[in-house]
Length: 327
View 1 (cartoon, one colour):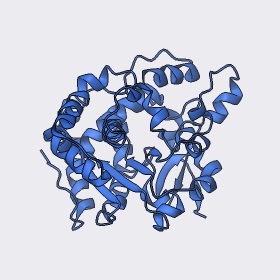
View 2 (cartoon, one colour; view 1 turned 135 degrees about the vertical axis):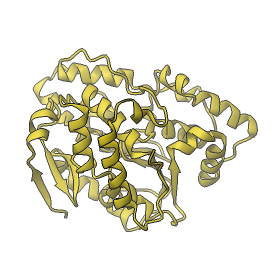
View 3 (cartoon, one colour; view 1 turned 30 degrees about the vertical axis):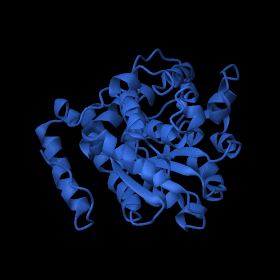
View 4 (spheres, helix red, strand yellow; view 1 turned 180 degrees about the vertical axis):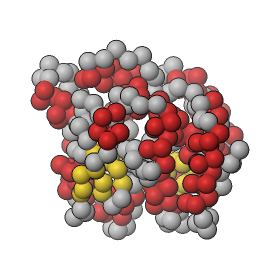
């Protein structure tokens, strides 16, 4: 098994803990909530099927958008069934690791339990196949059967400009993970890889090197924004599912940011209320905040932006990774 090391960091330990997360660990160089240690064997030995579809990403890279697109294509554009909450029909693999819900339930037995939140692994095991699964785990920490290509589920990885990811993850961390520091403090944690699932580049490049495998598809958030119909066609082809021009037009409309933001089945409003109950807070933050390309310019200082530019060039190197705009 992997070595799991307690991560001691003054900022993380004082400004980035909450009722479902008391600390962090490092595993294969990645920063994860300390609850990972309790479930690492289950993750490693999780039974995978060839007909699974896994949507993977670094947090705040367009995951929910991608999930809804994939679910509807895979389910023959059944918008009626898509009214079920996305976290039930396309569950987050390690939800109860990211949020230590076992601990939360033990401390407050009156919390309303949902099957997917009590133990997300057990919930997924009981899903009807083909299963659609979301994860933020890096490739290096996916179940053994995936990493070693013993099983070959379809893997769709969505990536996004790291500056926009940092800003979006900051707002999410502040609103739902009780981060109390400034954006400048958060951005420095991000650059050091000391945010959940970081380092960003290790995560992205771990999937990027698998891009030529026939069961792996890499998507870019910016391309979804620029030419969604083209991406829908690519995904339908990858999933080997038909998609007529009419299907594509309807899906493009369904996936518009405003429609997604106002759609209770995908905007996580009920999960936000659940987290408020756990944390005994009245946070009014939203999971879908802006969705704009280049939104980082509204909050990121020139100094931090320059640090990101140097960091980007130093990490992409000669990897052939998708180019990012430095301006």
